[in-house]
Length: 250
Image (cartoon, rainbow, N blue to C red; front, side, top):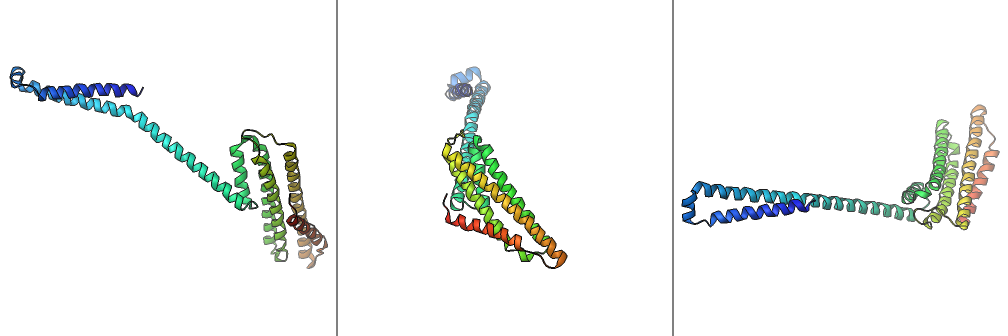
């Protein structure tokens, strides 16, 4: 469609130019014969026709220019997305146990392969639950000015690190899956199942720790003293998990 205005414009320019040229080259006898005003009018008409032709040609190029601009903007947007994805990938590669980086990587995997949505959402749900447990525990300590339990925060943070480590195992399995597919090998399915199950154990352990902490705080505030044996025993279990995790390779 954009060729028609270009062709029509070129014809009008040619006609206008011919009119202008003809009037400029008109002989004295012709000018006397038809009159100066007529020659002037024809000259003006030639200029107008040529101008209309030029405008028509320009209008014909507008869609092309618009397409080029849109294509350029689209390419810039695509390039920007690729650069952003690469930044996310690089940041996670350098700090794969960072909860924020882990979340970003999961979201990136989900966007690239919608077939992984259920799995990545399950991982994100586990991270959300861990965040809520940490938030509630910090609120508990602050509300009761329980500075004597401040060192237990590190134990819960270690549990979050193990959760991120398990999710890293899952992410590595996802990398091997082709785009648009969720066909994991039996070996990868085993890794994914074990990693998710271990995360559920971590969440349950943190929840249990918080319940022991609540019991200790309540008894301490009521009696001025409190039996810390159960809390210490559970802390020992969780710290042992941390020590074992530091020596294990999946």
